[in-house]
Image (cartoon, rainbow over all chains, first blue to last red; front, top):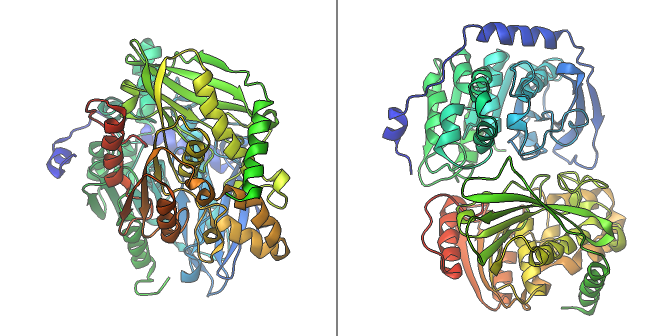
Length: 312
Length: 301
């Protein structure tokens, strides 16, 4: 098990490219030129007395159609505060009905490659982490991150959403995407990043021999002459480089026995945050399974929204 | 087991025996490691569904003990990932509709649990359980690796599949199942459950007149109906807060029905002990397989 001191002693070799901001400014500009073209379809099968569930589609980078589950409170005063929920690497985005009673809307995004968002881009799992690594403009995560940004665009375009109260959360890949999207979209007013993936790639791919990071080690072994280029590309997609650009309050949750995302690498992202921040360390817990994490996540978001003390 | 359930399993076995396995195994050069080789397996299950599995084989001479990690309820079953892969053959099979086994049918999540549920003959999950049996048979049939004892693990749906295969294949002598899915058991229809079991409630809310058909489609899959046939040693973990896969009372009843069951109940847990149980399970499996100590991660992560 890693100790808190181990985390503090860790130093990443990741550096930020000089043109990092320019690259993402250009990417967001390209995205902004694409019409959102959102569709919202009621899903009575998943709706209940507390929550109305909708299937959402919107258009993202390269014109790809992205799917999301959109859960709205069945009752309560509009506009609703909202949560944008980012998915893990291999898991499907959940239908989040657990916030409906509290009067909170949730958008749960199926980034490209996930079911319902994979007709034109489908690298698989394993596969996504190395898809297009040869160039930053073609790297699969450029589109994945754009899909998350587009989710925020969708929420701000909806009249029933309070655009001043949008929060982000997710675990593992969802934790990494929470950090990255919060850096790119000031509309996000706070976030909880659990067991974040997408941090400190050079160290993460060598500290453990576990997937998904091991995909990078496989790539480096298969194409040793392209390893430097791979690491250069990854600098533009490392949450550690996004963290200083986050202006909203942010929580990072780390399991000290995490066997998928090395705790040191997640901690480096926390260290790089320069705004209001909070660290949750979970000893004797592995990746995604700290018993107290879900409750703490909910309580923190409730406080941010202003729901503290309201029964869910 | 009821007469109806016995008839269902006989039909399932007959359908499998009438279907040529048509097994193909290809080494995956990209994902093979310095200490073990990774293979992609493809074989056919009932109804002609082509199924996919990841297989890892340690370097060196066998026979090796074999571990089948049954897939949980989700679109992806990960590439082989357990410290035991250094000393054991490890198979990660998928079922119909999962990624790489989705040529003719792409399952949805949520969605699969009620796919075709209005009629037992069209209910997709009945085929999924047959696919689990097929994966076990495919591992025994392959010639690429020399294997010894076969153990099964799985969580959620994977736990139910592992127990089912153990009940139907007497050569399985060790099973580690976490929070097996209560599909088919009356507990799965109770209100207030989370996904995936909540899919059943969604369906019945939408189609209240189909409750008899839903019961008929699912009841043969109830793990309780096969539990007494399991001759393997079973390590079973459940969590007191589980409302989505293995409700506490169901798990306790299941443990009582399995002749040789080591039940671990985790207070305050929903997933069956998580990291704490992963360590317990790893050392339990090492002991049962007669393997030395392995440093590293959970066997079922």
